[in-house]
Length: 183
Image (cartoon, rainbow, N blue to C red; front, side, top):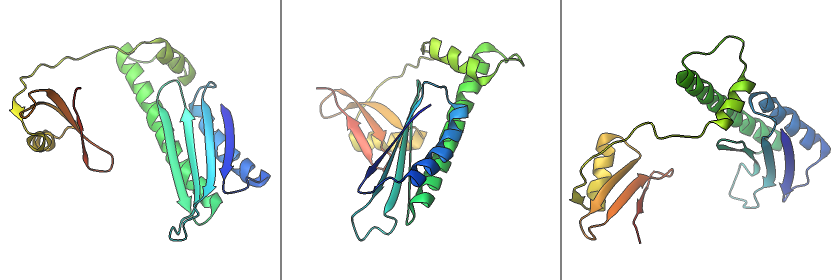
């Protein structure tokens, strides 16, 4: 795994770099060698922010991009927080990859390791495995948001009653809603 450290508003010392590298290189055992990790260490200048020492890491894999951020009053503690979050994400990613491949292939032979699964996942192209059809009735964006909440999905496709166009409403990470309209 390739490793890159950069600092913003902070000098990255050798001890800080080696500590971060020691913590984050442990993740390499669950990722393939083509992965790239970028770590940014910075200090928030705003005096109102108490946890101003921030460590933010991004792992670029052949699959998803994994990102984690840790903030505290000590940079070493921030690195620990961020590394723990990344570790959980990497394990979840690897678990999904292994379980998906086991499901696709039936069961795993006992002599196959994670590296061979990773190579097979890179070779396999995603495919459409399920198709749904449903009628779209005209409604307002507010009604669509209510329908989305009732069925428990993260998005909802509907025909906008005002424009008579097909729209998509979705739940954003901050808890608000987003609306996609065609142009």
